[in-house]
Image 1 (cartoon, rainbow, N blue to C red):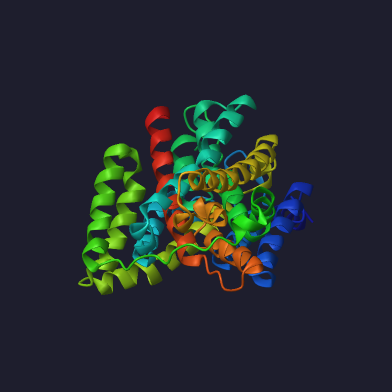
Image 2: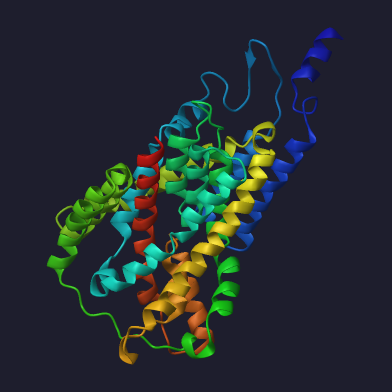
Length: 384
């Protein structure tokens, strides 16, 4: 009987709590949204499964550490890539190898829309301080407004990793960032309709000019130098982004570019999603701070979307009729590539079936990736 009692004591049934049940349901919802609704399946399936994996309850007492992150567990070692900020730069390398910056090069003024959308980051930073988070924690939370999961994880691993008196907010911040990235098609359209008129939604933009091969090769080098000198702390992210893009555009390293944008980024995405999801144990994740982070994240994403749209309307005040910008592409200034650009395209087609905005929207979209990484570097420079 004593052996049977000890066996039952070590089962998940004996250690199950209401919190574990909530988190398992959250994981199942993530998987449902990924499979049924096709919301960022490459991210939500690993994260959702990781949440379930991390919330199988296990016994904890002095001298005993069991479960998903027990000593010697493979996930314990893989999670080091999250804590140390290794995975996000590798994802940026893959993003750079699959991104075409031609539209941004052909119409550089659209980069301003990507910069304007970063308003959500700094608004959330101030809001987090107001709600009682310290400066480092507020900086990590604020980056959710950029709608860039890898950047959010990278900054949280530096500023809010549980050391030096800071809370460990990597899990809540990562889940919030990826959740809002997946919900771009749900969150953005109402804001786009609210802030634009029917006349503005049917504005037709001039086709982007043809960009030469030389320009495409020069851009990652020039972009690295410019952004690196503005924000040296962003080099781990932007350095890899521009390096990946140079691999793609040089045409002499196609094998390396192919590896970066396919096998490598897929492997890192699996490891990142699974380990971040598994780090959301109920006793750590279900806190008042996590609820506040989700609320702040939603508000920051809305502010970022509105910032890009309103700045496009402001730019139109100074542009001639043939050069006016369709404000719908301003929402693509957030870093959710390419989903926010696709939302701009779909919204535009609702009002003019022949008005294709996707290529135009990709310019502020990729500019948003650069802008959020610069913002993260600036925050690190001030707060570390």
